Amino acid sequence: MARTPKEHRAWVRMPSGRRLDLLDPTPFDWDDSDLALGLARTYRWGGHSAWPLPLSVAQHSLTVMHVRASACAAMDLQLSPVSALRELLHDAEEGLLGFDCVSPLKPFMGEAFKTLTLKLEAAVFLRYGLPRWTAKEHAAHKLADRLAAASEAVHVAGWSAQEVQQTLKINVPPLSDDPLHAIYGGTPWEPWPPALAAERFLAELTRLKQLSA
Image (cartoon, rainbow, N blue to C red; front, side, top):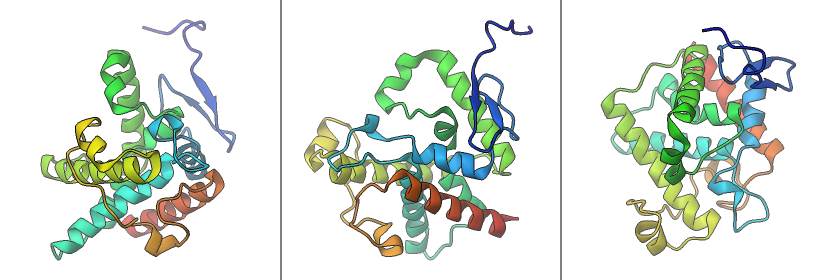
């Protein structure tokens, strides 16, 4: 059924000049710099932080990718460029939407919100040529994501390790070492300014796209 003009109002104008219809996204509605900036300006933990700045989804995405790569290396395996790209883009729809819903609230958002995010995710996967997760791959990804979340909860949001397990119900121990510190320097676990997060995310996205081509 065609939407009436009154219903069709979910447009986002991107910095590049492109426009995205959140209700009917296509893979051509943004460029890489739009996505990087959107993720750098979308915040984890509801925007709350024990630091002067909140933690961006862009920085989180880089953390998850490197945690996953380290897990592969520990088993004498190498994360392929396309798999690394999929890890980097695992929350890409949040940068297009401009909203990272904290996990416990997602069931309350309803099926319409789930459908919207799945449409955005499908457009991301199509644009970047990402294969769908196998069950084994997704389980490994979720472990990396939980490790990142547990670590962020302690080192960024200010929860104790005990609270992470008992209150947040994240059943993995937080990392002590920041996976990004050895690569980028700076203060371990400190959230980056949006411009810096966008720059670093975009550089990694560009690198992995070239390797995956």
